[in-house]
Image 1 (cartoon, rainbow, N blue to C red):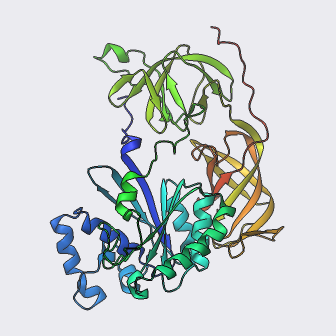
Image 2 (image 1 turned 120 degrees about the vertical axis):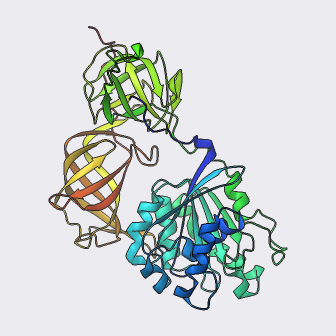
Image 3 (image 1 turned 30 degrees about the vertical axis):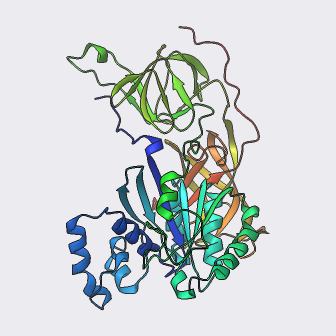
Length: 441
């Protein structure tokens, strides 16, 4: 079998996450979205009714749709990342409900790493607090293209336009420093449903769309990098099907396209070897196609029988990646044991893992001021900072701001195999110069 698992078409699927401080209403907002958009099954509604006794009062708690752990329901907080799926006639959605407590910042990074859009909830009574800044900063570091600032619990401040504008101005004072371009401010009440799915009669001063309408219509077609073809090879496909003549002596290279567009007849180069050839066939789950693009999963057949294996990178002739063993990256530290220079880890990048050593910690980011603190002794749990790494062999990569798939990595502790950091590579200083001559048998 040569067909990889199919992905939903990019333009029809929006991935988004909710974040904010504790008790800002993230889980309730998702429950309201699912409830008011008629995306719940009868058994889910029955389960909500049965779980009403956990929170007391005998009333349905919409937060229970995502707060699946008993500890979450008892404490009224989100601990783990919860994923929910729903669809409207306009678009499909994957929601990641991420924790608000500072203790679980690493969980927020995990849930938001693949998001097209991030919803930062702000309690209208409290305004912008440290966690609001922290999660907005993380959304910027993760290069999430679209941001919604949902100012929640507007009913508790009397639907005050002045309070809404006050919070908006405070946000806009630090947003330019983060480089986030597409930002939408929406006044809502997740508990009552105002401006979530249906427009509110309480905010005649707000002329913008409801939250769901914005999610349905925000343009995400340009979110993926389509400049510079990248295919990290996940496995070599040798099906040897006994009855299908197309699969006789079939040898293809499977993986998820991490950037750009590939077409049959296109010249490609395989790294690290630097040998060039052309694309003979492109296979998807539905069979051969003339072209494919990021983030589709494909199997490529090449014109020449060259050495390609898992961890290799197939690239196009334009927009070449960087190649180096010395790397600079922003990381979010996820382990209780602090990061210190000189420690060795496994670095997993695309489809390969290499040994790496942290050679320096350049700075730690102060979330309150958004200023770097130079030369810290280490990075503690949930800290964000810039580090330098040296790998056992060169990596071929793009800067994270250019390509989120080839510019990201994780660090894994040797021995325990615990994931200790999520990293975002800074732009390379040099690009690779592969052999420009065609492959000759």
